[in-house]
Length: 143
Image (cartoon, rainbow, N blue to C red):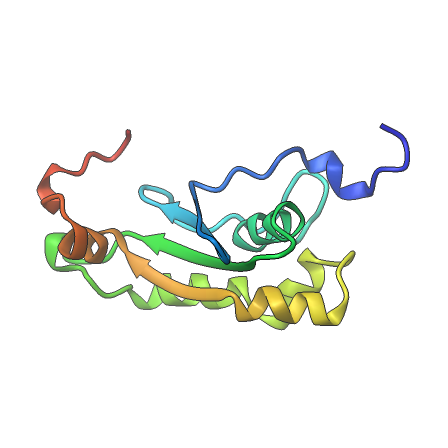
């Protein structure tokens, strides 16, 4: 349709999980077998995948607090409940100011800060399994 903004060229955002509560929305980007986070789109040379999901959620749920969480595979099999240094660095890159500025050129500084403040950080699939079940050895690489 006419009068739409440039970012509709990206198509719909598809987080790996989206949890909606009464006052909040949680966008989850999971990296199970991928080595790194996506940091670009066809239309933008620098665009954080996690921030993109949160950006779309901000429009879809304007009256709710938007949160984002990165989930990675930890080192050490079932005992890998803490993110590796690499996983932690991948998460930190998602909310670095230069990434926010490049990923959100259409947002005001206040909106960028709102998105940055909603990034919860990173956890591992192993920690999720330890807290919620199932047994880590059961979890397949692909669902």
